[in-house]
Length: 146
Length: 124
Figure 1 (cartoon, rainbow over the protein chains, first blue to last red):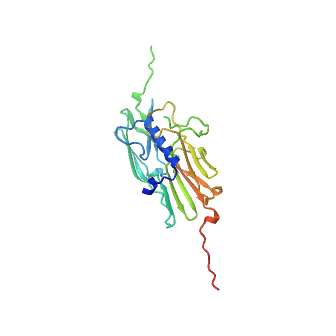
Figure 2: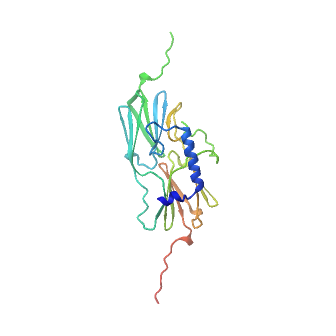
Figure 3: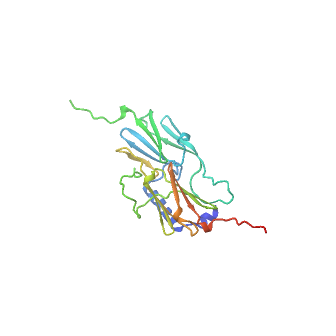
């Protein structure tokens, strides 16, 4: 693996990558629990008035093997991603190996007002979307004046 | 959330994009490239060969609900782009690609003359 970092194949791609990484740091300060960046799957979390949406960028998985657990407001996504093994042929060479392989586990702490019974998870184009509804009682309401 | 595709217009060259991680495996008859591009449907994927450059581009469509406010984002862009230089013995005309669950697989075969051949020896 050493020769790869010493002699990058495409210098411009490396510059590009560096530039983007710097840009990313400026855009999003790192989370308090260390390096979220570069983890697998990458996570985006968004909120709407009625719920919380978690997007996990987890390409190349069999949806049946992804474990999604919600326990006391903590959402855990776990599973395993198989390596792209070259066919058992002595003549094949792995030139670049950047994609994640192995077991993964990511944990998201959700707001207090989520309803654990109203969770849906869908996997499409390599993105796992978990939608959790907030409790009715905590949703904003307009109160009519009599 | 900025990782959301809002405009259908094609990706501009100067627009910042994500660099998809790839695996590149070479065997006797060609090169196979795998790229992780989660969120990109088949119709938003764009492969171009320009001279000896292979460009891979894609745009995410996540179908985000109205009024979503990002509270945490590790993926801050909605487009992917990466370019590779092909070597001479690869046959750019015969590139094939397929997309499955956010993983792009590109097969670039070697040209006929670059493929290994077994020469049979005739015994007199």
